[in-house]
Image (cartoon, rainbow, N blue to C red; front, side, top):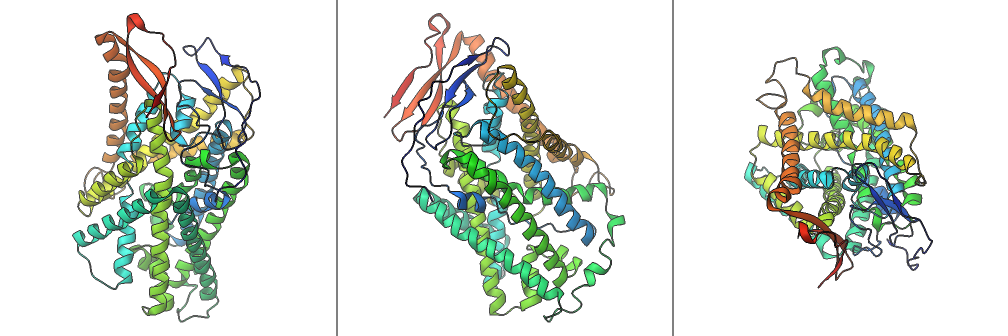
Length: 531
């Protein structure tokens, strides 16, 4: 959905900045080809691409539809508390969105969101966060749960029974098709994501409106207001561990808002576009999800929703429309929405993987990387504990970096003010940034709180916080890898890492770290043409 007008290049003269503290940070002026203003970034970061080889095919429609997610909370002890959690989750997501907005305003010509913002927030130790986050991103760049949900709905649509291996086979096939669609053509894949996103949006609107009709007593559903007469019944039985799990699901159902920031360099005038489209899409999503949950609870009991093997929408359609052709058609819409979710996550995370590789001159083939890890995580874990463990592990690792990122915004503000760098066009409120830090801190700390049923009473049959410990361990191992690669090897083997700029045939730019003997070091940033 790109605009046809030619790319404007800025030629304004802007001074270079260098500081004597923080191990002599050097700031360079960078400008991309997406009509953004010239901005300052720390020089060790990946170079800005004047002409993105991925094109400028992301318009406001794509930005909105990339933000929609398809997760539904499955219980928080009571109907009333469930709806309150949706509101709290929206506030948490909104505060984090403001953090991303300020980062995007400061670095409007860099796609990749977290990897870019961490790189610029913590430039010292040099290459530490790009290295650690790159490893974490690659290790957890799978969408197996999304593919499995789509496979479940396809079996439901065909009214067929499935075995675990049949389900895995269909999930692999679905994900392979999604990868092939995106690999075919960037612009058309985004247009397809737009179209399916529209289907998803219309489906949510239809569910919300149908729910109001059900509440009005105009369907065959008996007593649609039963769940709302004593909406907070069961709240007293909710535990801190269970409440945290419920809030985690709600918050991460909004997690798609950062997908738009993964493709910032492909958006024309991204700051202006994101200023209105990102909050609008998040607010629209929140309203539709609250209305959808009201619809679900008007048609089905709380127990029916909790016991369902698929998301609540499937239960809702069966209760309202039965199991005939109408329900099948609506389940087809859910399948389309699930497939669109695969496309949206693929588009966003592939850009993030690409940015992880650019500082080191190692294009990872991001689609293939995501496909490989997703297929592995579909086929390897058995049903039950292993699958839940892997999902929890990925979520917790993301929460750790989310906390570091929000604190990094405060660090970036202080550093840029000290260097008298110009302020970004968008600045989040201080109270919003503080709430974002507390939200991420909650998501990091509370999963350690034990369930009331004992250490083995979580969502897996072994120690409830195993995934927390493993996530912390993996981050620690990434730090060890960084120390060995960047610090220890050069000291032992007598060389120094020298940063050079690579220019590929398709216009992509990257940094490559090359070994330079200490006696010949200091040759500077050299641009290499790679054929």
